[in-house]
Length: 161
Image 1: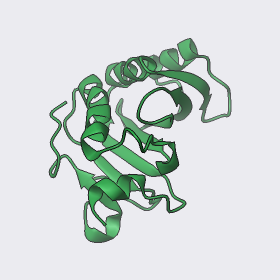
Image 2: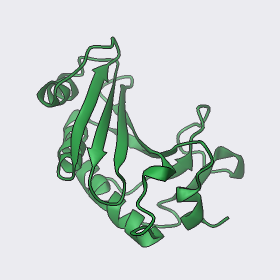
Image 3: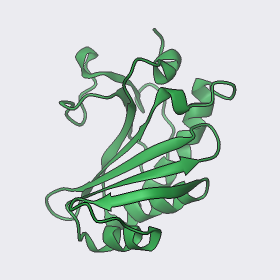
């Protein structure tokens, strides 16, 4: 199955897009980019406290959580996404964007439209590296081996964010 088909293959799993760890300013820039075409449905910190949009940004600014998960309703190519932020050692933040293949508008979808959809996130993060992959809880960042579930990376489709 080619990469274009794998992104929207409805196999019961979600698709994850991972980026290198970011700082809080880059994480906030990502939220602002997402807010251009999505609205926050729910956000929760690692203790289960619900966060408003402003609290979400405040938390990203202060690293006052171990992790944050946020759910967004969107217009455009993908109708719903999840953003997960997890603080690593130091001030770096792990970021994962998740969507389900059935939430992709098949009438508008192509690999090019997906890469165009992904581009603003990379620009916000000041990043060009990314991994689009099948859900895999044991995945290790950077692993693009055949068994990893990675569909493609910036090595195959550079976006230059």
